[in-house]
Every structure is written in structure tokens, then in C-alpha cells.
Image 1 (tube, one colour):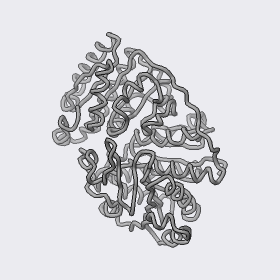
Image 2 (spheres, helix red, strand yellow):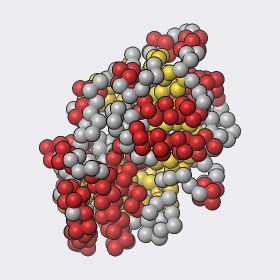
Image 3 (cartoon, one colour):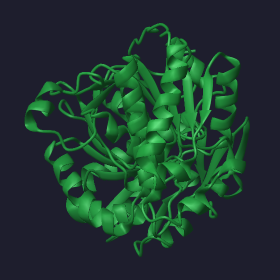
Image 4 (cartoon, helix red, strand yellow):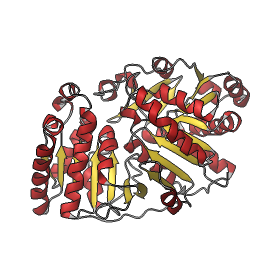
Length: 444
């Protein structure tokens, strides 16, 4: 384990930076590419022990996965890392038609030639827990079963209506789901019992995690199963948090955390948001109270009258920036403003909407020489960031109080965005003061 520890494919961009943050914060140098890099670009980051690709499969169809995931997994496999991780959202939201996790596991399993695929979803650091195969997630200080979660049970594209992950996956794959539950994970003979489960001729092995103790146990078991059955695994960034413990026990990494000093404020910050989450709504309202200007955008105009609507949004944003103000351009202020049903009547509209927001942000960065920016919304980030002409990201400032949405440093050949400081925030991630925190460049 002296070489590369992990390679990974993130099913959206915010989730990809979540993994990068978890690893980099714990001293594992990590780079995240926006596509399979050319050899010379990969060589620039040859010192990194973790290498990822930021993907979009969370918002794609099974047919898209068939075309795009196999070559991505093949490239990741060529890196000879001990583990190759298909990273999904910690809320596991997915469906047979969009973001099908079972399908992705089938493709990876075939490409890596292995029978059993270990899966970890619980991540106590993110307030996500699995107990006896059921997923729980926190919201506003309370923990909910995922099918009763105030946000994820009403997700605009993939609402979670089933907390039992085996039942949820049964709608997406015919592979059996085997469960190493809390009793098995903590048993005196856990190794024997998990070896028994892993000896199944095919399937998915779900490892429960409800605490730091079971997380450490699950990480050790994942490494054991991977060494025996193959290195392809799936799950949330809970995979990395679990493996970090196991790697430390094995002496593969040091015991300390990496130091990331506060980087200080910028005068002006631009944010684009395609999120309909109530968390993002509170963050926008709090940012306005903290000196930001907000600009409401019509998402239907952006997808049906693209160029003119983008031009108008850019001019409105420049007007506020020239006044010396930070600006947030948003397509919805909470669930009550969600126009998703109307957007979905237009084929490909959600992808176009993310792309339009990315184009708006890029033009604001170009014309106002902005050093820092934010994209809010998991699906939005996946399609918006591709418009910024960025090749790779590294971690600039982790946010330990709200992990999963770090400030990143962009790398690429396009001068206006090379060196850009950018944060990608999932809809329900972050404290109410998140945007001001990014503007001020502070960890807390």
C-alpha cells in the first residue's frame, strides 16, 4: 500500500469534491479531474495518492452509463490503486431511470471481473447513518429515516421513498444485496461471518455504519474483502472515511490531519444556484442579510430562450458586481418556487439549465476578473462546471464544520479560470452562513 491508495469516479461534482476534501484533510494528496486526463496533465499530479474523475452519472440514464462508465472505470483501473470507488451521494437518491446505482455497480463489477462489490453508505461525519440496512440522515438538528426526510423524500428528480437500501437497490439491479449489519460488524467472529457473506458467487455486500466505531470496523472489512475479491467498491464518501481508519491501522498513512490555513476574504464573490433545497433558500436569505445582492432568474427562459436570457443575467450580475457587491443568481428560492415539472417537459432541459448557469458564471469571472466563485446544487454543479474550462481541482480550504463543500483550487490552460477558487455546494449542504463563509475565506 505504498503507491496509490484509491481512484474514484464521482457521480456528481459536489460529491467528487466531498471525497477529495475527506482525503486531503487527512493528509492524502488528492487531485480531481473533470475528465480522463491526457498523460502530461496526469503527470503534473503524479505525487497524488488519490485520483478522481468528477462525473455526471447521478443525473444520467442507464444507457448513458453503458456508454460512459465502462471507459472511465477502465482508466481508473489502469492507475493500479488498491481501491477503485464509485462514489454516490450519501442520501443514496437514485431511481431505475436516473442515476441508477445498481446499474453502475453492474458495469464496475463486470469491468473489474469480481463477484462481490462492497458498499458503505453511512458517514457519521456527514450525519448519515445505516442501521440494519436502513438509511438515516440529519436535517436541522434531527435525524430522519431517509424516506421521511423533509428534503430527500421530496427530491425533485429522485425522491427517496424507501429507506431499506436492499429494497431500494432491488428496483435497480437483479444482483442480490447481502447485509453485514451492526450485529455482524461488531461480532467477535466478524471476519468469519463477513468472509461467509463475501463468498457468495455474486452480489452487493452492504456494510452498516452508524458510528465511528462501526465505521472503523467497516473500513477494515472493506479492505479485507477487496484484497480477496477485487478492489471495486461503491458508496458515499463514507467509504473514504472508513478506509482512512483502516489505512492508519495498516500504517499506510500517518495519524495526523493536514494543515489548511484560512485564506482570507475577497471583495466580490459570484454565486450561481440551481438548487431548490430549503437549505439553499436559507443560505441565500442569510447571504442577503450579510451584504450579498440576489438576482432571481427564470429557469424556463434559460432553457428555452438561452442566449438572450444568459446575456440578461450576465448584465444584471455585472451591474451588481461593479457596485462592489457580491452577487447570487438563483433559479429558485426554496421548494415552493420549484418549476421542475415545467422544466422536465422540455427534453434535456435540466442539463441545459446547469450549462446556462455555468456560462453565466464563466462570463462574470471573465469580465470582472473574479478570483472566487460558488456553484450551488449537486446536479447544477455537474453541468455548470464544464462551462468554466477547468481541467482539475485540488483542495484549497476544507470546511470541517460542514464537510462536503470545500473551497477548491482550479487548474487548467484557460487563463481566467486557472487559479480560480471555487466551491461546489450540494443543495442541502452547509450552514446558513455558508456563502459569507466562502466569501470571507475562513474554515469556521
